Image (cartoon, rainbow, N blue to C red; front, side, top):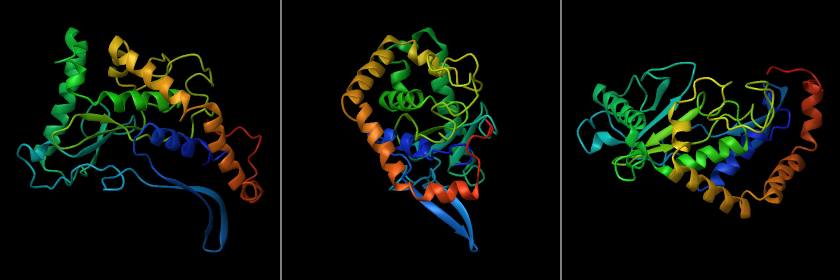
Length: 270
């Protein structure tokens, strides 16, 4: 957690995502000693990958090139650093160099189909619009966690999606929150009164996020889910209790951490 001296942001975001009913990486705080040298506190996290205990989608074999088998499962990421599917999309499962060309074509065409739908005036239609392409609740859950944590890397830099066999596109799992919750100068040095999905200072956010929110039906579902979560799982005292549990766990370790890495009070990028 080079930039997050609290060590809380990633575990808290994963915890919040799980509270919405989604899988998110389990986290364990550890002190690392490498070849006898103390390295400080690390957050031991599960990687996002296909697995029955992680992203539990159908295993896709290289020979699955006909319908319905070719329809899933897939995991891909939106990132501004690289692209192998175009449009800043990176195929993560199956690995791009191990996937059959037909599978690469299929998931690219399917996601393009969703994007093409979002370009049409009918994208709000309950039958043929966005609802026919995406699992809406997964998108509202992803949005709520990203916005509640005000993650500066939201949507365009570590934005994951997955699709199961004969299923729709699901947003998530959540990932990469070390610069969230006021810990980055990007995009506006911690201003908290704007939506990040439509923030003019961000880059690489897929166009469909603000368009989804312009749909009254989608916006209503965001509001209902938020109000339900705030009554229990996202209640302030519940979230602060989780933060306090990490602080208590690290009460002794953080002394050793900052003796090894005396960075408190220093301007650490970002």
